[in-house]
Image (tube, rainbow, N blue to C red):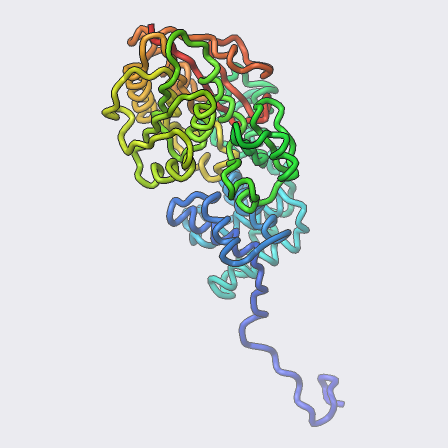
Amino acid sequence: MNQRGGRAGQRPPQRKTGPGRPPVEDAARRAAMDTLRAVRERDAYANLVLPGLLRERRITGRDAALATELAYGTCRAAGWLDQVLAACVDRPLTQVEPLLLDALRLGTYQLLRTRIPPHAAVMSTVDLVRGELGSRVGGFVNAVLRRASEQDEAAWIEKLAPDVATDPIGHHAVRTAHPRWIARAFADALGTTGDELADALAADDARPAVHLTARPGEISAEELAAITGGEPTALSPYGVVLDGGDPGDLEPIREKLAWVQDEGSQLCALALTRVVLTGPDTRWLDLCAGPGGKATLLGSLAALQGAAVDAVESAPHRARLVEQATSGLPVTVHLADGRDSGLPGGYDRVLVDAPCTGLGALRRRPEARWRRQPSDVGDLTKLQRQLLTAALDLVRPGGVVAYVVCSPHLAETVGVVADVARRCGAEQLDARDCFPGVPDLGAGPNVQLWPHRHGTDAMFLALLRKP
């Protein structure tokens, strides 16, 4: 035997000097990673990018569910994940290669917010970056994620969040992965920084259910639920809620018997039709119609009672979506700016579903909470006031205007309505009367829906009558 313990004359085995093991192909995590990259590089919307990737790559079943959870979840929690990573990385995150930061967020999300075993979360992320950037970064990713895995999410919150007694808004913002300014907007609208704020932000951070609208006059909610395996919603007579899956695969969607629409949006469109009018009731207007969900519901109801709808949309691609959605209904689409549509006045009912910050639908737009800025509010409220003023010019005396935004921000809701109503001399109606069976609507006259109270997006509606 020689000194190494091998057989005499036998050369010892050579140490491998080539690259490490090849990355494991992981279709679900690769789709999630590519979605994060599209959001970062192109300001894309995750809920538009990911479904296309899943179809293109034929990812289905459990892999599709995993990709969806990881992509949307990482986008929702991005700011919170960065706080954890900043405590685990020895340099500012701005100095970390962007693609690498995407991967670190993806890995940290798996560690802190899923039941994926830590070793699987770490190694799968290492494999992803090795496939993209080579083996040079594997050790760095491994080290950072192992530091992140030393504590669970509750412990990281305890370490990084402000004390709830002295800074409740800051504490709830960190605990539910919201920017502080958005948590403040929720608190202002709710009138509390206590338990209800925590509940509202937690509901806003949860994965939303898929809601469908059954087309009035064609199919009932009960029939749609039986076909799709869903359940009728509690508040809208046309709503159905699904447990999951891709609604685009459902036959009623393909046949235009139903469409995807949050129950809160359904309720707001229905509220406009429930106001009692004196005089004619045949001309309706949707002043900001794209992409067409509310226009389709209004058009379906108009068809049942002999009315017609004009739908205004300023973006050509969104106008085409409205035309496709409302095909066969008494809806005429106009490519125009709602502030100066050129349409003759005298409408009986007008809907202003105004562009807004979308703070009420953050759970459906995963990346939006980190993309929106407080500075966006000023430009949007100016546009909202202009659109609502235009609507009051177009409605006939005695007619009604519904002002809707998917936001609880007071500047976009009661601020806009109070200002325009005062300047135009419009009468504010008690909108609660048009939400029969809906609980917890507050003191009125406006209605603010909430995810934690109603299971809907945080939709706001005000009803104004032209004197």
